[in-house]
Image (tube, rainbow, N blue to C red):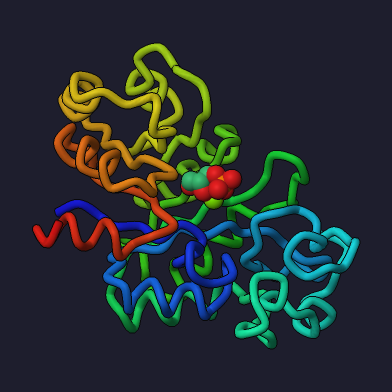
Length: 242
Ligand code: G3P
Ligand code: MG
């Protein structure tokens, strides 16, 4: 069964990476959530895409220089629409509670490309263990050294290689990093590659796919997961309503 991952939650309808967006994703039929993890000054794991707080809270400061208590006073919803005023930057713990309750998948994208957060891999894996979500999580990252480190910490937690450009035989590369999945941009996927990856034990999860025609083509190509801002569109196609 294909996994319908809501990208930053249902970010087509709600402010990205807020509990409102995650809750809406479940209501719209998502069977997985994709989120971005960064770390506060006091070492707490929080869900926000950018290293800076500016775009989604209006405060010109880096996450790494802000404590969790300071962060939780900020409004992460009003930038999107007044309807969402009062939404906060959630913690990874908050989302994990929802994932456990709803029995869905969680794609945890660790952001450790621009700011290198000390020991973030170990902290994320410890949260997965605490919440007993080993079978429901995949860790993804554009920083593949970080993914290799995750595997060294716990080889049983799935990892996915995020990339932008066309890699040559990316399934071979994934194997060198010890990864389980290719998190490919939508323009770097063909049915042949999906089949060859599968034959080598590697699955494809593809981002960020919002157009129904593109969703249909990827489903036909046999991908394992699609990451979308509009999980309702994908759900309609999967259930044959469209
Ligand atoms: O996981 C896919 C996608 O989230 C990667 O890009 O910038 O949206 O985190 P970005
Ligand atoms: Mg992401």
